[in-house]
Length: 88
Image (cartoon, rainbow, N blue to C red; front, side, top):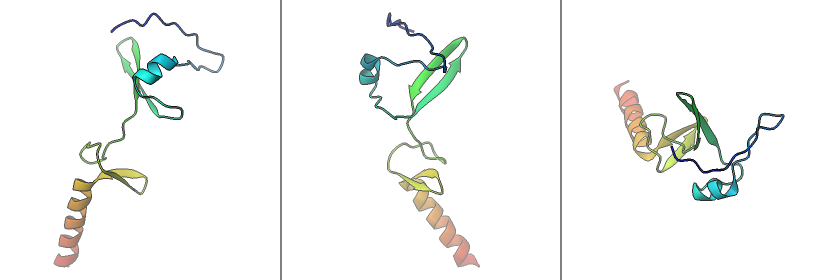
């Protein structure tokens, strides 16, 4: 890991401010979701990139019942549904 030389203190509510330079570098805007990971003794922050719940694809996502599904998986679900309804 590369040190930035930037040090921030945790405030009384447990918050840490991510410096603007780093937010700009990684394309993190106000209100963007951030994922928190633990890697050994390190805490890792990563900008959250939503993925399809079935295949992990991150392109052409649609929301269905609070879940994200890509176009390919949506088509497959429609095909399976048509097969199930046609077989009845």
